[in-house]
Picture 1 (spheres, rainbow, N blue to C red):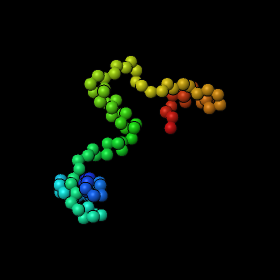
Picture 2 (cartoon, rainbow, N blue to C red; picture 1 turned 30 degrees about the horizontal axis):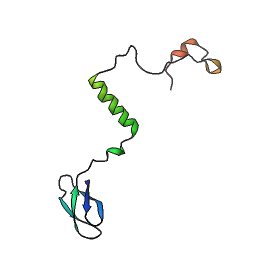
Picture 3 (cartoon, helix red, strand yellow; picture 1 turned 135 degrees about the vertical axis):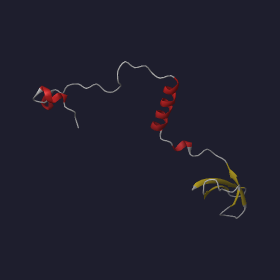
Length: 97
């Protein structure tokens, strides 16, 4: 099911749900029962979260001109110091949970 937008000349815009590809070009307004024309609009493009939009934009840019890197990006791991330091030096190389 998809949501389609219609505009009533008297009451304004309203939404109606129909199976995909089966929406009529005109529908009856639920308020005044007048014929309303179907409106073609963007499908909720503003509802996408900003981090996802930024990631998609970066992926699109890297497809055209990939960045050249000299190492795998990520944070640097520094050996622990102080009371949390492992007692055996070999333990420092073990994966952390």
